[in-house]
Length: 182
Image (cartoon, rainbow, N blue to C red; front, side, top):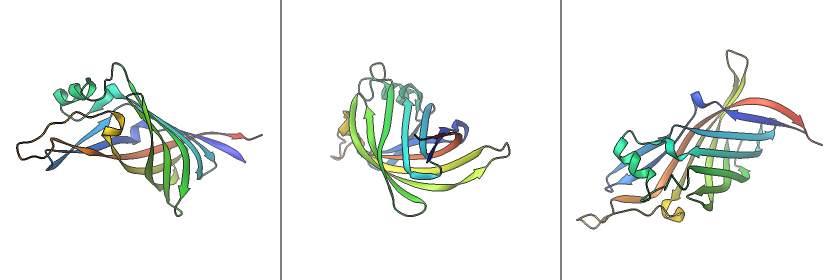
């Protein structure tokens, strides 16, 4: 069967995260620069091989001082580890539009398995005749698993930052080419 390559449409995609701050609100952030590539048997994304890379220098929380701190050694050590990567290992089809995506996430040179929830939002041809597909991606990780341990104890005994990080993405891919398998 022919395998179809898909590339990110960066103008219509976003990759973000949320983390508890002072245990009362969430702080959100995004990566301005990231890439996703996928290869699947036609539109059967349960057969897909997926890779993602994100430029850690592009992290933004709409607060320049906080963003500089996130890039420093207290958090991501971006000078030493400029890229976050994800490589799929398997995909489980739940129903026609829902999948569980398993893969290896690398942050700060540490690779750990993760499980993400993926919703297939459909396929369409845009006004220029390009075939596109859209996905919503969610998941949770514990930042300590990747050595992102910075924190502080509050006067009330709670922690300044939560350990759980919620991942969220809206990913639009553009069909590139089909290759025939041998």
